[in-house]
Image (cartoon, rainbow, N blue to C red; front, side):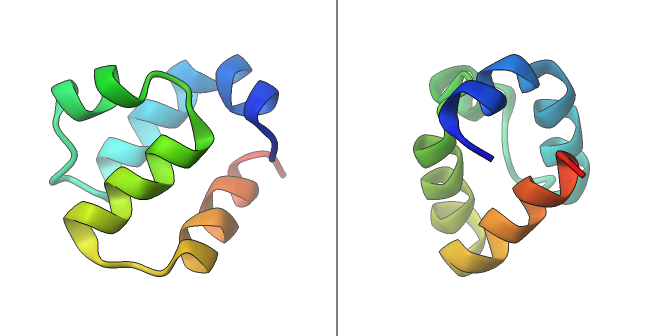
Length: 63
């Protein structure tokens, strides 16, 4: 999924992200606001998951 796809599906993605990673706050999601790299970085910061695993999850939303 690329940056434009993330922006286009942001409403859906932020809900799914909050379900999967409950430590993400509304403020985190406002800060990220559709940025693919910022979303990955924020999840890594909160959970320590690998960039590759996060990318796979984001890409699975586009399937």
